[in-house]
Length: 525
Image 1: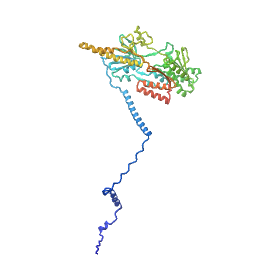
Image 2: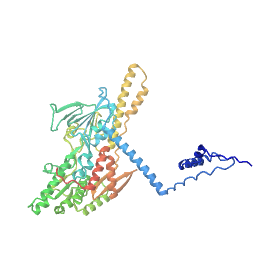
Image 3: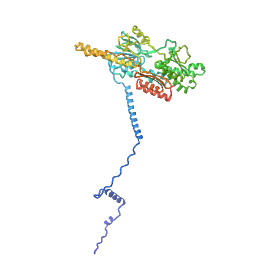
Image 4: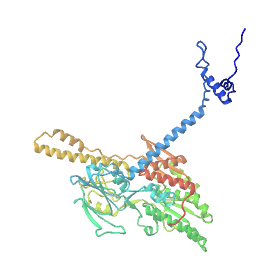
C-alpha cells in the first residue's frame, strides 16, 4: 500500500487558524435565522406565540363613572357654548328696518311691566313705534325690597329698555321724557325732558295713530302730612337706595357716643306702613338683614332694633287665603316683628318709616280722564272696555295695567288692526278696478270681530323672611296654598325665571350666592 503525504502549505495553514469569536457568533446567528427557511418538507412549523392576556373587565361602578364623566363633560361644553352664544347675541343686535312713512305710528308711554310686555309681543314690522318714559330702563319691582337691604345690587334688577327695542324688526325710537298731557281729540301727546342736563329743546308734542298708555301709578299718601317729606317709598330704584342709606344712618347714629337710651330706641325703631305684599316683604328682608349680618357686626345695637308693621285694614295680606294670613302672622311673631292692624297713625317715635300704603293715579292720568268726564268717572283709575280701549275715545287709545296677559292680548289686537288696514286698502283698490271684493269683505268682517279680554289670575307670592314664603296659586281652576321653606325655593325660582333677560338671571343668582358666602354689604354709599 502506498501513501501520499501532503505537506501543509502556507495557504492551508492560514485556513486552519482559529476563527474570531465575533465571526463565529455571527455565523451561528445567521444559521439560526436561516433554519426555518431550510426546514425540510414534511416537518411542522412551531406554534405561534400565545395571545396577550385579555384586559380585566371593568366593574359596573367604573363603567357608570366613565359614562357620567363623559356626559358631564359634554354637558358642560355644550351649555357653555350655548351660554356664550346667547350672551353675544344679546350684546350685538342686528340691523333693523328703517322708519316707514306709510305705516301707522304707535306711541307707548311708560317702560314698566305693561309696556315692556307689550313691546315684547308687538310685531313692529307693521308699525312705527315710539317709546316715551322718564326712565330708560325696566325695573323688576318684586325684588326691590331685596335691593333695599343689600341682598341684591341695583343693577341686577335693571335692564335698559334699548336691550329690548334694538332686537325688534323695525327701529323703535326711545325718548327719555315725562309725559305731560294727552289730547284724545287731536291725537297728540306732549312730553318734557326733566333730566339734570337738557338741550335747547326740552318739550315737544308729537301725533299718534294709536296710543298705548301705561304710565303706572304713584304711591298713595292719603294726604297725611309729612309722609312725602320724611317717609321712604318702595316703588322706584331710588327709593330702595334711599332706604338703605337712611337705615345705616340710623344704626350709625344710634352708636354715636352719648346717645340716651330713649334716643337709641327711637333711632332703631323701623316702621313699615302697609300690610300688602310689599310691606310684608320689606319687613321680612329687614329681619333677615338683622339676623344674618347686623348681629355679627353690631352686637351692641342689634338687640335694640325693633320692626313694626302697621296696616289700616283688619288683617294683612287681604288678597291671600286665611290660612296663609295666619301662617304669616305666626312667623312674624317668631321673628319678633310687631303687627298692628286696624290702627290709625297719629304720632309714633321712629327712626325710619317705609310707606307702602297703596297706589293712586298720576297727575297726567287725572288730566286725561278730566278731558272725558262723561266716560271716565272712576277716580281710582282709567276705565276701559272689553278690548282695553279707553272709554270715551274713538278706540285709538289703549290703557294697560300690570297683568302680563293683557299686554299679550293687546299685541294681538294691534296685529289684527294692521291686517284690517291692509284689507281696507285692498278693497278700495279692487273697487276702483271693478273687481269682486266679496272674499276680501269676508276676511275684513272676520278680523273686525275682536275677542274680548278676559283676566286670568295666576296666583300671588310673597316672601315673609327667615327663608320662608307663601303662595296662593291656581292650576286648572283649582287653588293651592302653601308656605314654608319649599315655597321659598319656588318663590326664588319663579322670580328668577320671570326676570327680563339672561343677564338679569345670572346677576341675581350671583348676588344670592355672594350673600350666602360673604353676607350683605354694610357700606353706606
